[in-house]
Image (cartoon, rainbow, N blue to C red; front, side):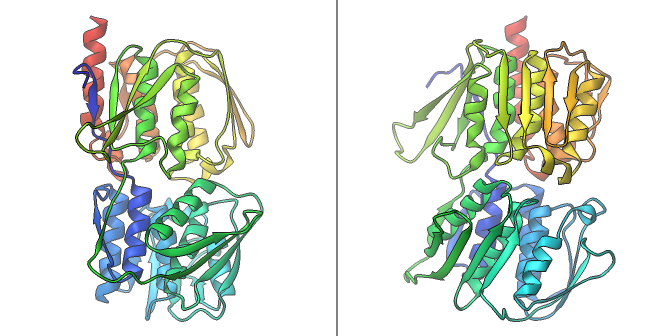
Length: 415
């Protein structure tokens, strides 16, 4: 091992954790889940699943967890009882109607408690009247994943046909990967529009152990730090380039920004892998990339490109307006205050080569990903502050401890 490597402990993937928690719940706790995420979203998912299993309160409050709300809506539909599903003010502004329409088409009783198309909703649990369902997948892949996971509880499984442009398809593929690991038959039509989830093949015997891989989205922030601090070697543990996580593409994106990625295998444990990333300073002057399959990466890439003075043309960003904040507006407003020149269209952001300057406080709009996207700039502007830094607990509770390792190394190298 190179003792000069900064050892970063990434969080477990919350996307994988939440899918496994729901699948395991529906499969009667057939698996032992190790390395589960400690993020707010996963802690919330575990708590609400315990609430559903224990038959306590019929009100399910999802705070600001979009994944939690969408997965839970499908679970409540097939559970006995009358339920109210709701969340905080921002979650009650985020789309849910496409999933509601699809569940209603299967015969489930779901009504809006306040405003059509938005939470809160009332759910009367029951049985599916049909196993074939269509859903518009242009706003959120989580709608599709919720239906696929729900199929585990249906006697004949489920057939989900995607209508229109598909957003974040790798997350649908991740759900299929989890189901297959759980012993469930999943098939995809030749045109990629229909996912069929069958029944689980009984394996018997003792519980199988599933170890959750660390999170590729969280790794993206350290790719940005490596790009802004050439020469610093960062080791990311329990991460693989052949991951089922779609955000592994961050390695390819940052390769154009000068960051190389090398796989390191433990000489003692064949399954133990990590990556070493380092910027060698060879940077492309232009970047063109589409984010429809990896929207969570866009804020990080946009901020890094602005800081490096790169001409960046970023496409497929429309759905980022529907996240925990309007991430497109958040990124544009803060970068413009720092001196960036940006053209913005409905689905495209064009950053022109600019020289950034610090501002007193970066606004983060209540969004954990905006906090972490701007954090690498603290390597360049150590006196700048980031609003509400503790928002990182939603996905990466230990972020600032890990960031400080990089900051100390960068400060030492600069002195």
